[in-house]
Length: 170
Image: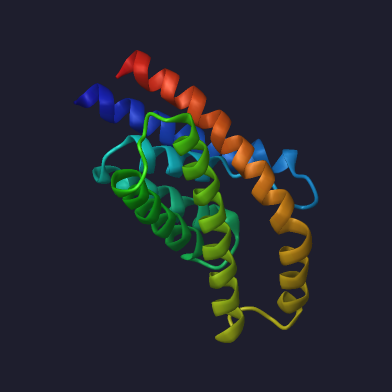
């Protein structure tokens, strides 16, 4: 129990540190890979609902360190985790490669939709300035397609490696 908690804590710290330091350097068209999203989707597909606390705290740390409006990452990660957990348990078979591909693509798309809706909500309530409206068009037509493709590829690669690690150590 203590070893599992220790390994989870180390993984949590490494995931947050790599998301803040490494992955933004690999941005394409203004969109950086989202390693935390890959972790959240892995937890939703291959782990129990009890890991929701890890998803919440990853979102909180990204909110604190990311500089975006507070609560957006936490809300988006939690919504995606709940949705993909439900899909993985009720609709898809976990062992199929096609279902993993589909769950990864749906998870990335649902994160992008949740993020877009949270941005629209922030604009509607005046959380963002009027210059954010121009950024919203940039987000929809430039960042969203490249972010979707990049994050879907990252999620599929992480699914493969996390599944191998999970089979070996757990």
